[in-house]
Image 1 (cartoon, helix red, strand yellow):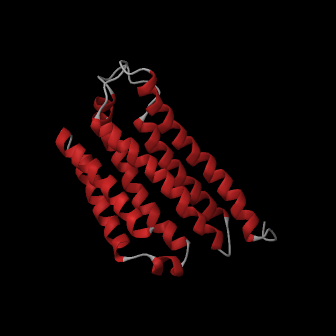
Image 2: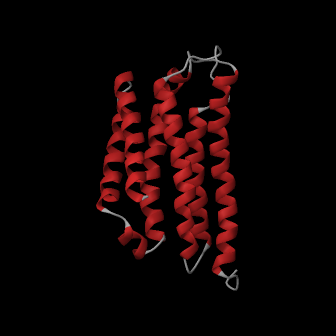
Length: 191
Protein backbone atom coordinates (compact mmCIF):
# COMPACT_ATOMS: atom_id res chain seq x y z
CA UNK A 1 0.00 0.00 0.00
CA UNK A 2 3.02 2.32 0.21
CA UNK A 3 2.87 2.98 -3.56
CA UNK A 4 -0.78 4.05 -3.59
CA UNK A 5 -1.17 7.84 -3.93
CA UNK A 6 -2.69 9.61 -0.93
CA UNK A 7 -5.70 10.80 -2.96
CA UNK A 8 -6.60 7.26 -3.97
CA UNK A 9 -6.43 6.09 -0.37
CA UNK A 10 -8.56 9.04 0.74
CA UNK A 11 -11.19 8.14 -1.86
CA UNK A 12 -11.32 4.60 -0.46
CA UNK A 13 -11.55 5.83 3.13
CA UNK A 14 -14.20 8.38 2.18
CA UNK A 15 -16.37 5.65 0.63
CA UNK A 16 -16.24 3.46 3.74
CA UNK A 17 -16.83 6.43 6.08
CA UNK A 18 -19.71 7.52 3.85
CA UNK A 19 -21.33 4.10 4.06
CA UNK A 20 -21.23 4.03 7.86
CA UNK A 21 -22.30 7.65 8.18
CA UNK A 22 -25.05 7.08 5.61
CA UNK A 23 -26.38 4.18 7.67
CA UNK A 24 -26.67 6.55 10.65
CA UNK A 25 -28.48 9.19 8.59
CA UNK A 26 -30.76 6.48 7.16
CA UNK A 27 -31.57 5.19 10.64
CA UNK A 28 -32.54 8.68 11.84
CA UNK A 29 -34.57 9.54 8.75
CA UNK A 30 -36.36 6.17 8.69
CA UNK A 31 -37.20 6.51 12.39
CA UNK A 32 -38.48 10.03 11.92
CA UNK A 33 -40.54 9.00 8.89
CA UNK A 34 -42.11 6.33 11.10
CA UNK A 35 -43.66 9.09 13.21
CA UNK A 36 -45.29 10.50 10.08
CA UNK A 37 -46.37 7.10 8.78
CA UNK A 38 -47.79 5.89 12.10
CA UNK A 39 -48.53 8.94 14.28
CA UNK A 40 -50.53 7.00 16.87
CA UNK A 41 -47.98 4.21 17.35
CA UNK A 42 -45.62 6.12 19.68
CA UNK A 43 -45.91 9.37 21.58
CA UNK A 44 -43.58 12.10 20.43
CA UNK A 45 -40.92 13.14 22.92
CA UNK A 46 -39.19 16.52 22.90
CA UNK A 47 -36.04 14.95 24.35
CA UNK A 48 -35.97 12.30 21.65
CA UNK A 49 -36.72 14.73 18.80
CA UNK A 50 -34.03 17.19 19.96
CA UNK A 51 -31.44 14.42 20.10
CA UNK A 52 -32.54 12.98 16.74
CA UNK A 53 -32.05 16.42 15.17
CA UNK A 54 -28.77 16.94 16.97
CA UNK A 55 -27.28 13.60 15.97
CA UNK A 56 -28.47 14.05 12.38
CA UNK A 57 -26.64 17.38 12.37
CA UNK A 58 -23.62 15.70 13.98
CA UNK A 59 -23.50 13.09 11.21
CA UNK A 60 -23.80 15.74 8.51
CA UNK A 61 -21.06 17.85 10.11
CA UNK A 62 -18.81 14.81 10.42
CA UNK A 63 -19.26 14.04 6.74
CA UNK A 64 -18.53 17.68 5.83
CA UNK A 65 -15.46 18.15 8.05
CA UNK A 66 -13.89 14.89 7.00
CA UNK A 67 -13.23 16.33 3.56
CA UNK A 68 -10.24 18.08 5.17
CA UNK A 69 -8.69 14.61 5.35
CA UNK A 70 -7.99 14.91 1.63
CA UNK A 71 -4.95 17.01 2.57
CA UNK A 72 -3.31 14.34 4.71
CA UNK A 73 -0.06 13.45 2.96
CA UNK A 74 0.40 9.99 4.50
CA UNK A 75 -2.28 7.40 5.23
CA UNK A 76 -1.93 4.27 7.32
CA UNK A 77 -4.17 1.55 8.65
CA UNK A 78 -4.27 3.15 12.11
CA UNK A 79 -5.75 6.41 10.76
CA UNK A 80 -8.18 4.42 8.59
CA UNK A 81 -9.32 2.32 11.57
CA UNK A 82 -9.65 5.39 13.78
CA UNK A 83 -11.89 7.17 11.25
CA UNK A 84 -14.12 4.15 10.71
CA UNK A 85 -14.36 3.76 14.50
CA UNK A 86 -15.42 7.41 14.82
CA UNK A 87 -18.13 6.88 12.18
CA UNK A 88 -19.29 3.72 13.99
CA UNK A 89 -19.68 5.65 17.27
CA UNK A 90 -21.86 8.21 15.46
CA UNK A 91 -23.92 5.40 13.94
CA UNK A 92 -24.38 3.84 17.39
CA UNK A 93 -25.81 7.14 18.66
CA UNK A 94 -28.37 7.06 15.84
CA UNK A 95 -29.17 3.41 16.58
CA UNK A 96 -29.74 4.22 20.26
CA UNK A 97 -32.26 6.88 19.26
CA UNK A 98 -34.18 4.53 16.99
CA UNK A 99 -33.77 0.98 18.31
CA UNK A 100 -35.22 -2.00 16.48
CA UNK A 101 -37.92 -2.53 19.11
CA UNK A 102 -39.15 -0.50 22.08
CA UNK A 103 -42.11 -2.68 23.03
CA UNK A 104 -40.75 -3.20 26.55
CA UNK A 105 -40.68 0.57 27.15
CA UNK A 106 -43.44 3.16 27.46
CA UNK A 107 -42.07 5.00 24.43
CA UNK A 108 -38.96 6.61 22.98
CA UNK A 109 -38.53 8.96 25.91
CA UNK A 110 -38.68 6.11 28.42
CA UNK A 111 -36.19 4.15 26.31
CA UNK A 112 -33.86 7.17 26.07
CA UNK A 113 -33.96 7.90 29.81
CA UNK A 114 -33.27 4.27 30.69
CA UNK A 115 -30.46 3.99 28.10
CA UNK A 116 -29.07 7.51 28.57
CA UNK A 117 -25.82 6.31 30.14
CA UNK A 118 -24.94 4.44 26.94
CA UNK A 119 -25.95 7.43 24.84
CA UNK A 120 -23.98 10.00 26.83
CA UNK A 121 -20.94 7.75 27.09
CA UNK A 122 -20.85 7.46 23.30
CA UNK A 123 -21.53 11.16 22.87
CA UNK A 124 -18.65 12.00 25.23
CA UNK A 125 -16.44 9.71 23.18
CA UNK A 126 -17.23 11.78 20.07
CA UNK A 127 -15.69 14.86 21.70
CA UNK A 128 -12.45 13.00 22.39
CA UNK A 129 -12.53 11.45 18.92
CA UNK A 130 -13.05 14.88 17.37
CA UNK A 131 -9.95 16.29 19.08
CA UNK A 132 -7.90 13.34 17.82
CA UNK A 133 -9.42 13.74 14.35
CA UNK A 134 -8.44 17.43 14.34
CA UNK A 135 -4.89 16.54 15.35
CA UNK A 136 -4.70 13.99 12.52
CA UNK A 137 -5.57 16.77 10.07
CA UNK A 138 -2.43 18.61 11.17
CA UNK A 139 -1.35 21.80 12.87
CA UNK A 140 -2.68 23.94 10.02
CA UNK A 141 -6.19 22.65 10.72
CA UNK A 142 -5.75 23.07 14.46
CA UNK A 143 -4.63 26.68 13.95
CA UNK A 144 -7.66 27.42 11.75
CA UNK A 145 -10.03 26.63 14.60
CA UNK A 146 -11.12 29.40 16.88
CA UNK A 147 -11.14 29.47 20.65
CA UNK A 148 -14.81 28.43 20.43
CA UNK A 149 -13.60 24.94 19.46
CA UNK A 150 -11.47 24.74 22.58
CA UNK A 151 -14.52 25.72 24.67
CA UNK A 152 -16.88 23.38 22.83
CA UNK A 153 -15.09 20.23 23.96
CA UNK A 154 -15.12 20.80 27.75
CA UNK A 155 -18.65 22.24 27.62
CA UNK A 156 -19.80 19.22 25.58
CA UNK A 157 -18.17 16.83 28.02
CA UNK A 158 -19.81 18.63 30.95
CA UNK A 159 -23.22 18.33 29.24
CA UNK A 160 -22.57 14.61 28.73
CA UNK A 161 -21.77 14.19 32.41
CA UNK A 162 -24.96 15.97 33.47
CA UNK A 163 -27.04 13.95 31.00
CA UNK A 164 -25.39 10.74 32.19
CA UNK A 165 -26.08 11.45 35.87
CA UNK A 166 -29.49 13.17 35.89
CA UNK A 167 -32.61 11.45 34.57
CA UNK A 168 -35.01 14.34 35.25
CA UNK A 169 -36.93 15.29 32.09
CA UNK A 170 -36.33 19.04 32.36
CA UNK A 171 -32.58 18.50 32.70
CA UNK A 172 -32.54 16.12 29.73
CA UNK A 173 -34.41 18.67 27.58
CA UNK A 174 -31.97 21.41 28.64
CA UNK A 175 -28.93 19.25 27.84
CA UNK A 176 -30.30 18.33 24.40
CA UNK A 177 -31.27 21.94 23.62
CA UNK A 178 -27.86 23.23 24.73
CA UNK A 179 -26.03 20.65 22.63
CA UNK A 180 -28.10 21.52 19.57
CA UNK A 181 -27.55 25.24 20.22
CA UNK A 182 -23.79 24.68 20.45
CA UNK A 183 -23.86 22.95 17.08
CA UNK A 184 -25.88 25.74 15.47
CA UNK A 185 -23.57 28.41 16.89
CA UNK A 186 -20.55 26.46 15.64
CA UNK A 187 -22.11 26.31 12.15
CA UNK A 188 -22.87 30.03 12.16
CA UNK A 189 -19.32 30.82 13.22
CA UNK A 190 -17.65 28.38 10.81
CA UNK A 191 -19.70 29.32 7.75
